[in-house]
Length: 208
Image (cartoon, rainbow, N blue to C red; front, side, top):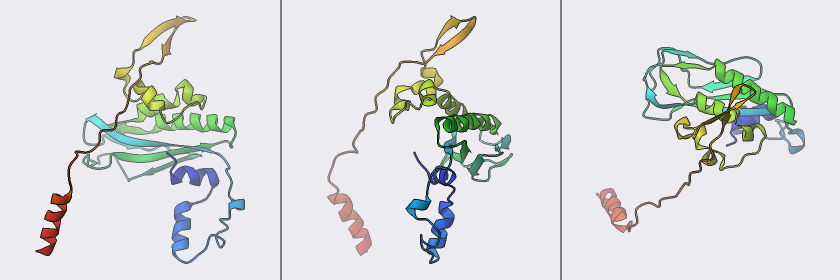
């Protein structure tokens, strides 16, 4: 999923600011946003940090990461805050940018993201930081050899309880082998039926 934060950091263009200026009457030409002027300057990765089921309802401690190349767009969370868990579970978007557009630039951004996730402190409320770290350290992700079925093919990344963990000795240390477990997603259509009765009921209310 490509969001505006990644595009902004990768190109150096503040898209939200540009939208507001255009709404105020400026043109793309006025802002210098011509195709020939737009290019990629660095690698950027975004991690969506979200609440997860379980644990408590109040933030016992909250601290966002910071530093060069680190951007955190959050909803103003703070220690002692009790988020409403009935709505969007998003805590914030963590964006890390580094290097250039080469393979090494991607690796620098990946390492910065891992460090920043380690610096992201959320206590009291369950979150998905561990899952994001597992994704970032998966061999296929590191090799940039993934597609849209990546998580379906590796369900243990989101839920370690699904993993068929195996450990083998290698040079005196344990080596983790990723599960070959596969899952299928099936689309279930909504209940079949005619909508005429519903539309007639709505029209009756409107007529009244």
